[in-house]
Amino acid sequence: MTPVHSLHATILLICLCVFGVTVSSASPPTSEQILIAARNALAEGFPADAHRLKLRIIRTGGNVDDTLALRVIWPSHAVLPRARTQVDVLTRQAGRWHKSGWALLYVSQFDSVVVARTNRRKDELVNPEDVQYDWREITTFRGTPLHPNAFRTFVRDNKTFAAHPLHTNHLLRSDDLRPDYSATTGAAVEMRYQRGHITFNLTCKAREPGFEGDIIRLYNTDTDVTYRARLTGPGTADWIETR
Image 1 (cartoon, rainbow, N blue to C red):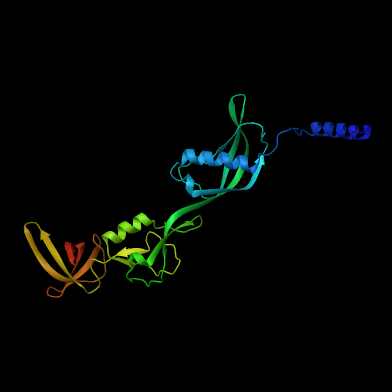
Image 2: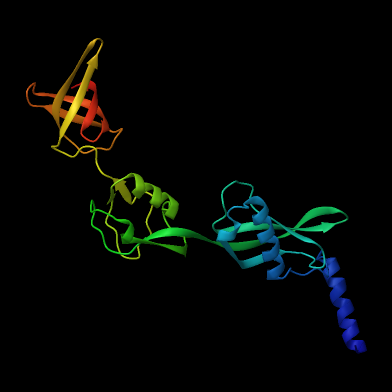
């Protein structure tokens, strides 16, 4: 370094000190360091789900000495991180962890999902061969995706229909399918009436559709009376009240 350059460097250092600027040899950690630490923290906090997450760095900040041991702290909540998430970056100094910076990460979520193979109109029958299973990103997916195990259980126990229009390559939500109705509008429903020691059955017509467990209106043409009843199975119900 020439005498002139040495003089300039000395002047610059004096100016930095005068204006309160801290001079440090610390530098931002590499993206790989942060990602490794972030993955380790996820594996510890969410051992069953960490494999479904893919991380990338958006930006970092702070003053981190990358020669020290590094640790990442996720936000203190029990929800699996998703999309943009800021984390704290800690370094170990004198046997203790200190916050030295931060990182903004993008967390992509992947999962095993059920995908429609064909178009289906609302209330149209859906068979197992009408769907396929796939591993896809669901970071920005709205709603709760339908998982293969849940679908297999559902179609095993129910005749299955589309609750909404389904389109080819459409990722199914948990509420996109429905079982068969226990009663449809205008269908005959055998209502069990019980009040005190009085018990008898009335054949009524459903005024609205419903599933088992739903409370719907039933109408009896002989008595010209409407009842509220809880569906107990296909075409059967228990009286609740007379309207």
